[in-house]
Length: 492
Image: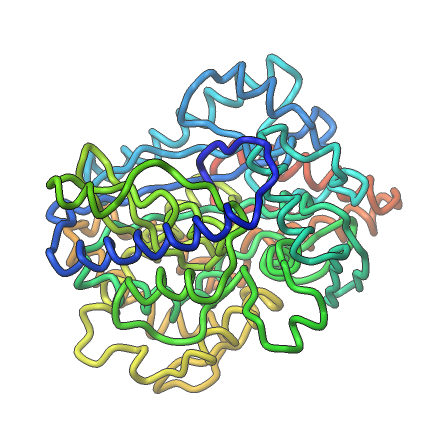
């Protein structure tokens, strides 16, 4: 979905042509896999961070156009809502530049953008769901002016034929309807990219799926939505519901959702792209002029534009990515389960845990996905989203255990091993994975702090509900700028 699309109406012929073109792309992709045309000898990692825009009071600021103009940097882009932005951090080798280089690069980019945003009356908030967001803030007027999002909104509602139902039970209970997909804009995430070889892609994707629940439990940072305290990572069920193209009757028939964990371990990256074509009708049937087979026959690498655009409208929690950079094609796993924030330090700790643990699991003689059902991995994700760092998750050889115990006893040593195998020395590993360790020891992460701080303000100051959320949000942003990990944040 990173490409611009025109505002138009699709015909039946458009959809037929697009389906045929996707099949041509799929055939070309299969040939490329057979011929080993992919770049992977110097694999890189990448990072995308979605952020909220707020005013000086901590309320959502619908200022994305003005802020992007002020930042004037192509690394920044619009997102679904006018109160969102996204930054793409340039890809790099995992161990490049020493232990502080990546953190400094990210902090410099965010601080520069914050200064530019402040000049037009807005501020950046790196958080899973903005606590001060109200339902009235996510109407049609909040939808980004970018034509791709308005077209996507039209196509999702055309497929549904009715309003979206949003329903969650947590500490509080939420039942509401939406007539646009803008509630999805409440979900702001951190997305880690990992370039892998075609031969290793399936193993890395399977490993990422196996640990998705653990990641979410440790990093939960989205306990509030529309003034309600719901799941510890409310972003997970909200995203699943806010982009659902299925009516209730279609759900009962077993049609797969577009926000999808998947349904099986895979043996090839081809499995995922083939499933996308087989199971999901096109939302944006836009055809390019390139013939992928002709491009291959000429000795060049095709963009596979139709296949990649379609892939961007199937919202897997771990998404396959095909891209051509500097004339060379490559494959990436895009890890999409984590919320934004709370700090850059927390973000890089989450990244170190993810990159290290997946590497170690891939290198194990007996892979975890051969000892764990796929449904157990999916159940872990939703248990983690509901309960956060207090969740109990299943792991082979341990059964159902508290996530903190699972991480401290089993997974943290594996993450250290994986980073060491990747060439990261102890002096770099210890501070990053030490943040993960201390979250487990203290039982505290961003979601825990938000909930505790909200209740502290509400109970001690006797302000109204929204004012307590607003004060908590402002305090959150102050701590975010200090860059101390969230498990150290006081509640007072």
